Length: 78
Image (cartoon, rainbow, N blue to C red):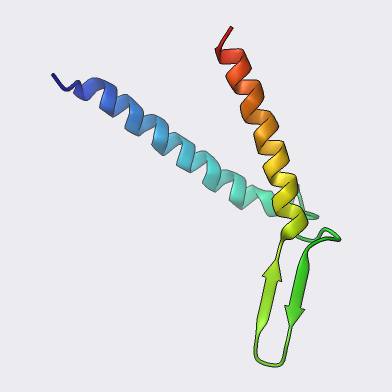
């Protein structure tokens, strides 16, 4: 049988996760004003077009999130 109670808990956790990500995005500009302005980020402005490639910011966030998830997985497997 399908358990609606566990589905409800899962949906609440997903919703809380999405709300947490939204809060981080709102506060991210204030807490980390340098994020997106690192030396490896490319910003091109032409006459009719503007492009932004946050290469170094993406690499930095990837490393930080990978380490954080690795730590969480290690703590949960104890």
